[in-house]
Length: 319
Ligand code: UDP
Image (cartoon, rainbow, N blue to C red):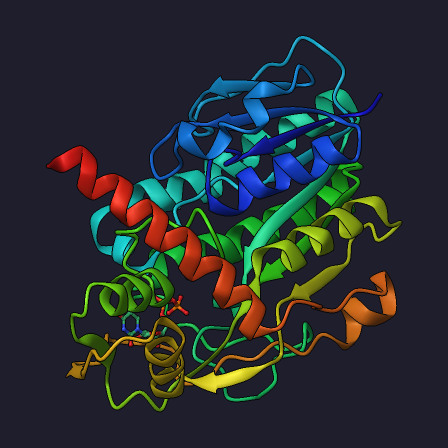
């Protein structure tokens, strides 16, 4: 039986990945400091005797006293709202934390996957963004704590592959949504869905003409698994849904799907907010035979159902 370690395993994407790996028959060790992740996300996984949770901050070295075949490095806060509150923590997690995760992989002779981000491209001048694009990132802007530390994590991974025998690979994750996003995470999906369900105005930043492409979490997790299973040492691959839309259209879609009568409230555009983002997934198709399968309709239906159930649970607890 093969064993995977998932750092950030109690987070939104990490917890879905843990369940997927358990479904594949693996042993899974989730590692998380519960900074932005939650044990609630692991309720299902914890019932499985092939699953183990270790509360640990990846900024500290990690020893695991059993054999490890795969290390998925997903540990990092990822919401732009957190960039203001936890900038240095984010930078240390993506630098020292990635170093510690690589060290763990090398010690066990395990395959390593670095979960990087579309933020590596910054505010791109080309669209869609292929992996060969170097990006346009402001190194001293408000998003730099995340963008630059993820770029550092990519460079660290590649140099360990080239010079220290690491069997590593890098994915760049584009906007992903689905159940278990934190309700107060501040990103566009939790904000719009909770606002629409509560009948509050949807806060569209800027004029809403900036674009994003939304990938449902089950599609992403399947791509992550394929990337780890494939002989793609040293490759960098975009994982995301190329179905691009403006933020304003996305707000209107959420209003329509929730049956809400919320108005739109225009707020200032955050500094350095990327104006366009859309993955070129040609490489993922060629190398992994992967492309998204879940439509926005279906993905949003699941997501809205999950949010509405969890919002009422939270309200009940508070009342
Ligand atoms: N956004 C918005 N209203 C919100 C939250 C986000 O209009 O309440 C916009 C944000 O400015 C960005 C896009 O939605 O253009 C996606 O933002 P998010 O924070 O989800 O992630 P990002 O793609 O910027 O990392």
